Length: 182
Image 1 (cartoon, helix red, strand yellow):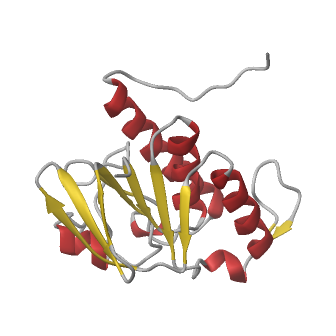
Image 2 (image 1 turned 30 degrees about the vertical axis):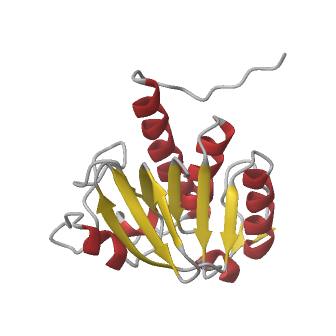
């Protein structure tokens, strides 16, 4: 059973997956490969002079997979339900249980709303500063929580914030992912 199920494979979802997998949480990322990044050319991502959106996504996937995350490109999530203390994530290929779920589905809030996540007056998924929704252990990141702020770097930061909160929940204390050279 994965500890963390991430629904969406754009910058927000892949960032969350990178942090959780790098820190030894069993992570699965479901990616329909419909991210807006395929239409982008990135000039404003810190540390990257410029890169095509598809190339960016491919590099990010490779990085996440290098930490043993299970990337399921092309596997669409069709439902998420609370199953006791866990989540049952249904896809077109099967069902998975997870302790945490991260919604990173762009502007599509349908799955999060079906789970019972509260929304704002503007129809966005309502989260706190750590990306927690109103449903315990469910997180939302990226465009579904920010009206018209559809920037890869912002979404990646949201994914990182959700992952750090999940890691902190697992550790029972605040966790930071700060690497130093040997």
